[in-house]
Structures are given as C-alpha cells and as structure tokens.
Length: 333
Image (cartoon, rainbow, N blue to C red; front, side, top):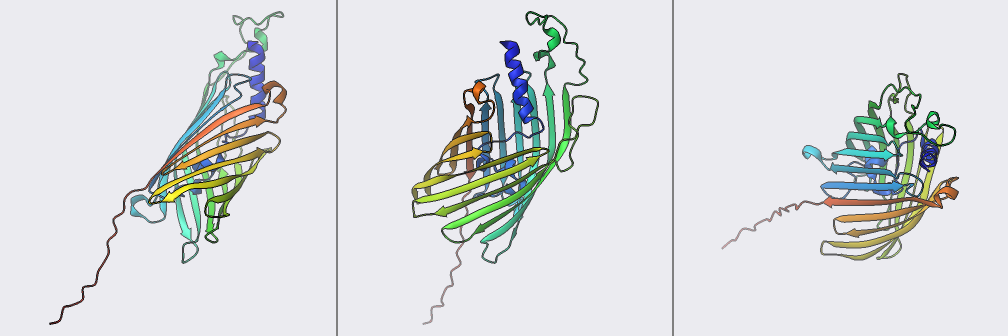
C-alpha cells in the first residue's frame, strides 16, 4: 500500500509538472493573479490569506497557502501602491516544498477625468526556494521481487536537495466603471519573465514563462442582487488552463458604514474539475470557501474528490478628517 500511494503521488505530480501552483478562488487571490492588482481595493491596507488542501483521498495531501499584504499610496505618493507576497506549498510524500517571498508594487494611470477608468501596471521581484526529502521516496531497486524492503539501497545519486532562484513577474490591469450598474476589469500578466533555472541536478532546466489573462465584471440587477461573471486563462509551456463561471451576490445591509453581503456560485476548470463557491462580506472582512469535484482521469482513484479551499480578506480603512472651509460674512453695523 505504501508503494501504491507513492506511485499515485508521482502520477499526480506528472500532471502538474512544469506548472505553477494555483488557487480555484483566483478572484480572492489578487496578488497571485496579477502584480497590477496591488492596491486595487477600497481602503488603506489589505491582508489576504488563502489555503488549499488537495488529493487527501489518494495520498499525503498537497497543502498550499499564501499570505499577502498591500497598501495604497505608499509614502504619500498618490497612485503608487506596494506590498509583500509570502507563498508556501508542500506537495506529495517527500514532500516537495516551495517557498516564495516577493515584494510587489503597482502604479495607477487614470484614463478619464472623472476617474471611472484606470490602467494599472505592476511588478513583483523576489526569491523562491524549493527543497525535497529524497529519503522519504521509494524506488524500484527497493523491491526485492516479492515485497518492498526499505533497507535496500535505492541505487540513486542525488546532487542537491534544494534549489533557489530569483524571479520577476509583470502585469497590466484595466478597471472601468461603465455605469452605476456595471463595472468590470480585465488584465494580462507574465510570470517568470527571466525564465530562471530550476533544478535539483547539475544541469540547466529553465522554468517556462506563464502567461495569464483574466476578466471579471459585476452587473447590478436591482438594489439587492448582482451577477458576477469571471474567467481566467493561463498558459505555461505545453500546459493550458481555463477557469470560468460566476457568482450571485445579495446585499443584506448597506448603510451607516455597515456592509453585509453573501455570494454563491459555480465554476469549472477545463477537463479537470468543477467547484462550488460560497462567500460573505462582513464590514471590512471577506471570507470564502470552495470545494473541487474532480472530473479528470484520476476520478476513479480519487472517487471524484478534489480539493478544499478557503480565503480570508481584511481591508483596513483609516479615519480621515474632513476640513471644511467656511466663508465668514462681515457684520456691518
């Protein structure tokens, strides 16, 4: 059974080799989606936490999580925003660990005098390290013809158990409020601009650039209900992925600084999975959960079970004093 689990783990890894880790709730992971999303919120500071667990029904679960923080108008420079991305992933039995730390920044270029449309350009520069524990893996040389014998040598020679590289991402995002009822945004991003070397061996294996296109809109049907369609397409090497779907939003309360709303919807990942999403706004907080239903070739083994994902967002809005100037009329006697 141990050997069977490891084989399945390697099989799953073969489907994802060469691809970056991603979240189903791409709309709740703004800085991982596009560097130009830095500062794209209504407030002063934003903190985002995402966590995903996958393939628990097959092997040791893959655990992915990230923590990002960003702020608007850095150093009192209007339209200049900055933040930090902290990302960690543990995949499979070994496990294969990925750790990324990347500062991020963006600048807004307003295209309309009334500020209804803006183009944002963003960049992320940082450091990524990958490590693996080869001792936790098993190999065919440890099979003695009848059973697996962990005391047998694996017959392999590994040069390194860690790899590190510097990385850079770039993106553009267009946001437009068409009317009181309709607003939308669309963006484009390039990840691994320099195509860095990623390998545990003494050879040159370059990480493929990843190209991403995304769009999301909101159409207010009436004062309480809105429709939010969204999609994301990305390409890396020979791999392609399309996420598409939408959510319905119902505002529960919106007055006197109190904002409460609920969301529910469904999305699909081409040739791989379908998933359900539920979320809620509670004043400065937003929280979401989703669950993937596996539709890929691994469905017989996984019994259609995919991954559970959660997201939490907090936006801080500082109090701003309003200074009003009054003209004093002279009192003539």
